[in-house]
Image (cartoon, rainbow, N blue to C red; front, top):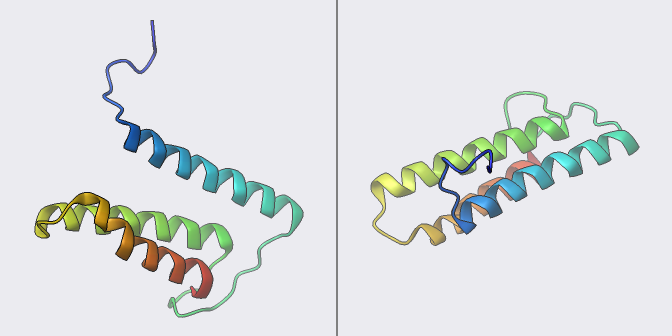
Length: 93
């Protein structure tokens, strides 16, 4: 018996969880090789690499929810603004 058979996983959902898991693996690997020190970017707080990844993931989810509720366009297009916001936070945050 498959443990998660009660859940309905679409290919898109599995890709999303794969990306989240990939982010965690990348952060763990980078943190082992090079420790992250808090830096000040355009965000009003000092953030480490892990903080910026967490904030960008949360904002990507928030942008997706807002997109679903208020914008009558295909959900695939949400990757454009969410990707831009995540890139800015990861590189300049």
